[in-house]
Length: 337
Image 1 (cartoon, rainbow, N blue to C red):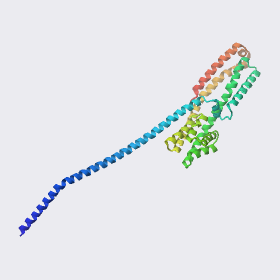
Image 2 (cartoon, rainbow, N blue to C red; image 1 turned 120 degrees about the vertical axis):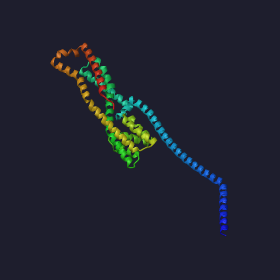
Image 3 (cartoon, helix red, strand yellow; image 1 turned 60 degrees about the vertical axis):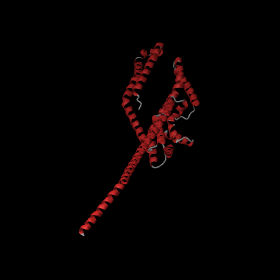
Image 4 (tube, rainbow, N blue to C red; image 1 turned 90 degrees about the vertical axis):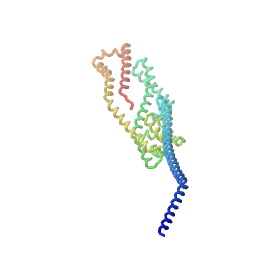
């Protein structure tokens, strides 16, 4: 009985193992195919993830390249505009020179004043007793030289006053932008509260905006009425920020710092060149001082220079050579920063 039971158990085990083996043999292909499908799904998912990462990377590179190209195009356009403005700045018309000098006068009236200046200067020279041959030269100097020199002097003085106040105006705009105000409000604030001539220049920007001109274009026009690189820097910064984006307050703060450093460098260069300028002034004044001392001690010795034609010729050549020497020394001791 016990042997029979063991035989039945063994038979059952063998039958079950055989059935399992047959089932495994029949299902092996399905299991293998499912594993292959799982591996393929994993491969496809991984490939999709890699493609997404590659696409995202390509999109970032394309965005950076697009922004870089936009900045390059903006800089190229600004450079072309700047070249056109520079050609006008180097040789501006008389109307623009008067505006840059801050003089509220028309070119026609300026020509009338120049003619009156030449006539008055010639009459004064004639009354003093200047030779008649020299009077035409004095007339030309009075009509063309002296009035235009005065306009150039006013331009330089106005630019100097503008550069002294301009960094402070930029700091005010930076604080306004950081506090949440738009740049237009900062410009209006400078146009109302700042000192001259910064107030007038920013008021022109506000007036241009009221006429429908965009803020970047109005800021770029500042270089036409204020002939200095710093005004052009401001317009270029506003133009680039409008086209390419970025932190405007940080850009203007950097510009203010650059302008202050330029001012310090100019002061340092001027201080270093003062010795050379003093030497040039002494050398230029020495002939006149010597001539005056000789006239005091021996008037008969130096009088022929002023009373004879040969003396006039010598004085003319001496004045020419002195002028050339002064101009050469001026170019040697003047530095552009």
